Amino acid sequence: MGHYKKRPFPMAAGIFMILAAILVLSGCGKDNKKDIVFYFNEDSVTKDEYEMLAKEYSNQIYRKYSTEQVNQEDFWTKEIDGQKPYELLDEIVTEKLLENYNLKTIAVEEKIVKDYNYQELMEQRDKENQEKKKGVQEGDVIYGLTSFDDSAYYEYWYSNLETQIKNQWIKENVKVTRGECQTYYDTHREDFSYDIGVTVLYAEIGFSSEEEKETAWKTAEVLGKEMKEENPEKLLKKYPNIYLEKLELNSLETQEGKSGVYTQRWEIASQLSNGQVCQPYEQTNSICLMKCIKRIENGSIEFEKMESEIERYLQMQEAENYINREKEKIKVKKGTISSETIISQLKK
Image (cartoon, rainbow, N blue to C red):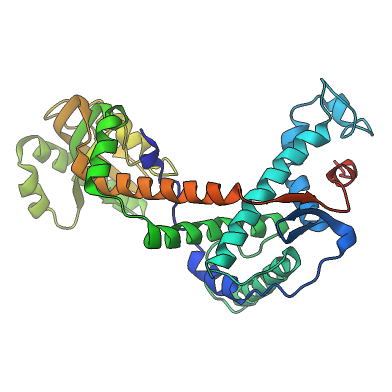
């Protein structure tokens, strides 16, 4: 499947909750010039921020070397295969910082946030943790994590910030026409082609006890026999209390979801031939069965069904290009403390 299918820019679960926090930060804090690792334009990166990210990504470097090499006291600064390990980690951390400070710069310029520094961001994290802790104690329903550590909040913050930037920039700057979507579809036709496609009448009979489970099995057996003979529309009207739905599935879009909850459903559906009804099966407190209404091999998803997703994908591509162009404008200057000094002091 093409990139559009991944939906790479979903709204984060807590995005509306974080907006209030985004808008109250104000960059009035002062950084200690002795602890500056980088300057990105006028923004300074402190030792605390760099060290937090270095710890977060250090395992990516450890995995590249043997246990014996990693356990050496001078591991980070000793040249191995022509390169010092700290240089590899510094490359990862510097790129992450560059990406995030670019987002910060854009967000401030676009008035999505007020200016802030790392210290103020962590103070905001502490405040949110306290509010969530209080909510838990008072019995409130808390969505997402009940507390954040430094790295989790940092990632959460910039992920939400990126989404806000893209959505606002698209709204104000991007217009994708139907013709552009059609052109993308035509030139990426292979991305919309599939090996197997089936339209099924899907039935799901729920239960919450062993007694109900036994009844569900009996109902499924009766329904399965009727599925072989009756028109799907008649069954939909005849059984209003049973979850019955027509589903269009294919090897590109199996609807299995992130948890893979419908993997079994697709595996069974993909084996059905026209008119065939599968044997009832159990799936997550339900007895399920399907009838194959239509089977297609070597088919493709129609443009009309994909137009909105293609439009969104093209919009997001434009937003990503804009963010990358802005990143290229950032001037990087080294500070008073080196990345080598910070990384060499990391503890395993």
